[in-house]
Image (cartoon, rainbow, N blue to C red; front, side, top):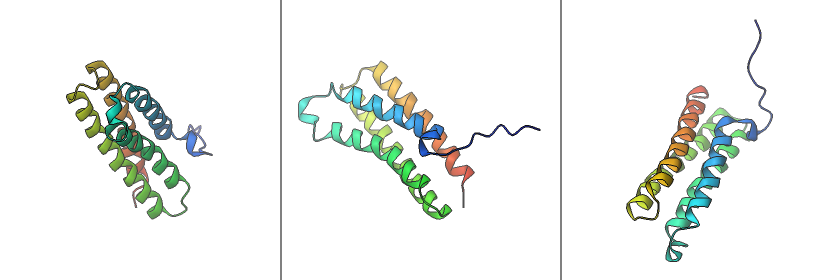
Length: 124
């Protein structure tokens, strides 16, 4: 029987990191059109939450104990929830058109599902 598992050598090999990176890039793109008076408000919050997802995935990857990895991946999960809430607010304030919201929310969902899989597969 052949082993179909991919060897993970770097955090960038993780599917969850790759999807999170796409999400962060998308959030930076869509927040460029937000009102200027939101630069230090919602724009900053959304960007920080998106960056936090992958930063915590990466930090967890670099930890040697399962407990430490789990801690950082749970933090990434919280940031993903935070971002999803901020997307709803941005849509409801009229900063995002429905298509932008749908695209970002779909990417956030994809990232979130992979993150939950990572958490389940490495449960302590």
